Length: 78
Image (cartoon, rainbow, N blue to C red):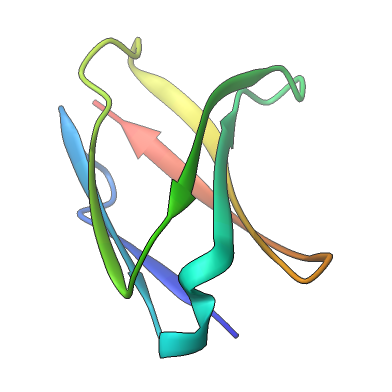
């Protein structure tokens, strides 16, 4: 499985797009570069809009977890 984050870089909000319908039980995690968890949300479908306007500008790590498999992507906020 895989996912996309749009837009990236972003200013206040992201859209997570998964590539398979069976990801209804996936978990989205956002952490800083030290690994500190900042945000966690269950992804109920193929797309999910998330407001992250409280984040300071910088680089973060977005992780999607499904059945014990983790996929990580770099996320940049302006």
